[in-house]
Length: 82
View (cartoon, rainbow, N blue to C red):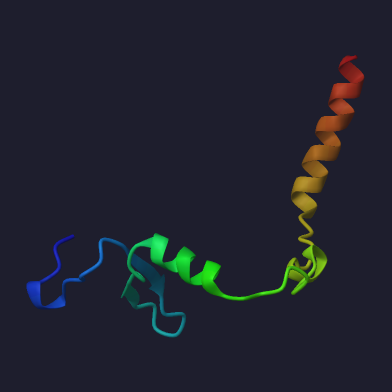
């Protein structure tokens, strides 16, 4: 897609997302080279015990009944073949 000159970005990467309210597509200029982002993160004085692995991974476990059924069926089929 060609973006008019007055709307072009300075960076070589952009983020794309959709506005959940009206469906508009939104392009946002990237933060610049990722090396700058990682350098900034490395510069932060954060203690090694800031968060444990369990504290960092706070996502709820995903239940996927259809996949659980599929793998249960697949497991039964394998046992029958043996």
